[in-house]
Amino acid sequence: MFENRNDQTKTFSISQLKELETKQTLRQVYDALVEKGYNPINQIVGYILSEDPTYITSYNNARGLIRKLDRDELMKILVNSYLRND
Image 1 (cartoon, rainbow, N blue to C red):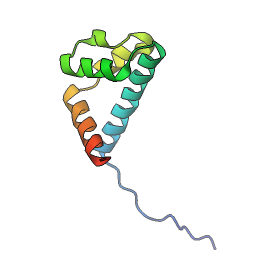
Image 2: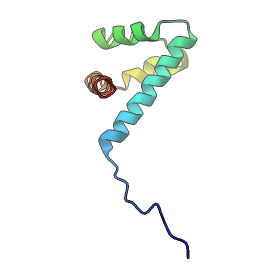
Image 3: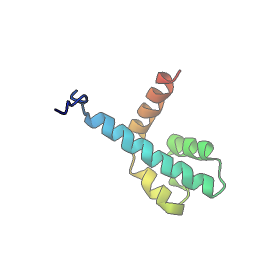
Image 4: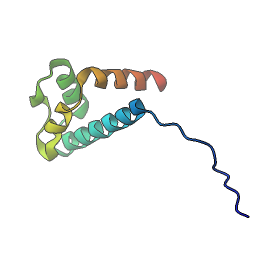
């Protein structure tokens, strides 16, 4: 009677979930920086290079959010994303 045309199995990976969570967190930090009038790219790069949390505003808990991210993993995701979109 009813055919299930969407019967393909979808795969799930922990690394994909981690990447998605990292991107969402980074977006929240980015948005908080924009709302406070900062240049978000410069501020995030400053944080990544120095690990100094004062580059990130505490507005909307952005500083707390970014500190939960592993900087090495963040760099890996950013480079991978950049190269995939080239």
